[in-house]
Each structure stands twice: as C-alpha cells, then as structure tokens.
Length: 284
Image 1 (cartoon, rainbow, N blue to C red):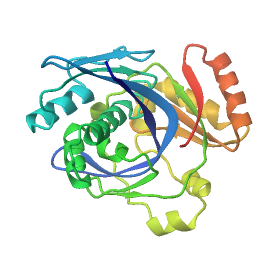
Image 2: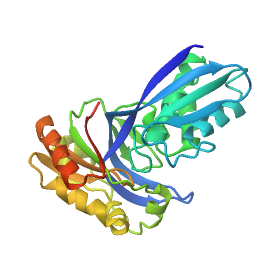
Image 3: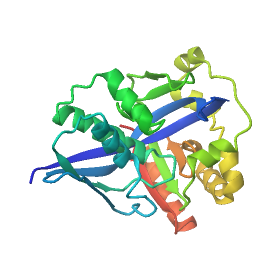
Image 4: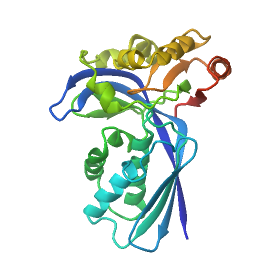
C-alpha cells in the first residue's frame, strides 16, 4: 500500500486588526500572517472500499471531533463535486500543533490535503477553483494554500502574498486552553481603522510590528488571565521585540532578535510555567 506524507505548517498572526463584521457573521480583518516550522504530519494511503478513514494521533489529538473536522469537510466537498472517483483514502494526522490555539493547524491540514489531491489525483483545479473549495471549509484555509507571508487587507478575505522572507525567531507558549474562534470574535464590539499599507512597506518589519497589536487580545486575556501573565513574562525577556497572542488565541508568541535569546526564554518559561507547552520555532 503506497504511503504519502505531508508536512503541514503552522500559521502565525503577527498582528490583527478587526475592521468590521459582515452580514454572514465573519469579520473583515487586517492581519500580517507568516508560517513557521512547527508542523503536523499528514499520512495518506490509498485503500480499497468506498469509505474514507480519518484518524488523529500525536500530542494534541484530544478534543478533535473525528467525525466532523476540516479533513472530513474537504473529503465531503470533493466527493460531492465528484472529484474523487472510485478511490478511498486512509488519512492520519499527527497533531503537533495545539488545537484551539490560533495557530491554524486544522486549516493548514485541509489546505495541504487539497493541494495534494489536486496534484496527485490530477483534479486540474485552477487557483480560483481551489480557493472556492477552501473558502467553504474555513476562513483560514485559502490563506494556507500557499505557505507565503501574507497581508490580509480586510476586504472579505482579500490577501496579498509577500515575496520577502521574515526570518523571525519565535517562542510559542500554549497554556492548555482551547479558544473558540467563534466565541472570541462574537465578544468583540470595537472596530479598528485599517493599517496603512504604505506605512507597512516603508517601515522595517520589526519596527512596524512593534507598533501593531492583536485586537482580540483583550477579550482572550479577560476570559483567561493566565494568557496575560505569559505575554507579560515573555515581553520582559532579553532579546524580545514584542509578545502577543496569535489569531483568536490561546497561544502566546514572542518575537526574538536571535535564537540564543529565544532558547533561553524557553528554559525560563519551563521553570515559571512547567505545565505549559513551549517551543522555539522559526518562520519558513
């Protein structure tokens, strides 16, 4: 039985502005998004039969609904559109990315699997068709189709892919909290003006990001005070440019000037918060 393996990389929101709420319940946001080398591993097997088998393994498999998730939604859509004919798959996702942390693991999994099917099952879907399917699964899925630095500009998911590499050292701390994206956004009642794209392109990346924030952070830290404690602890470590949550939380991120400072901070975090998961990562 032939086996395929895919590395599915994590998303990081370096900044996030909530601009408005759409009629469909989604929000228009400004966000600078990057991807880091923290990744899930997707194993895919072609099997006989008519039913797909989807399973999860790894440290962060707990809490994922095996019957309804981004992978089962993708398979349902592709079969509904008659793209996967007479072939079933056994798919396992080794979850190294925390669930409900704002790190986009589920969205990245679906995007990478969609790209895999398009290439290996010869679906011949163009970018527009891929985006249309991805949009039906979740807001972050189209963003993850191409793992490039991305600027969301707030017009119903419109995005600009950036060619430059960011080369950032990141400390990621997961405080064992599953944040519901829907719940966090529903509690947001304040809206921000769009960021200036001209200002973004003229400023050095780190200087620009220092002046930015995540509009959802007050909501998350209000619900979960321990998140604020982690952010503040990271913020005052040597070599830290800034710290905040990513996405709708609960993962806390710190951007560091060098790997040595990031690794030392990880050691301090493990002493200060021994029950929390923490890694040092780099942008890809």
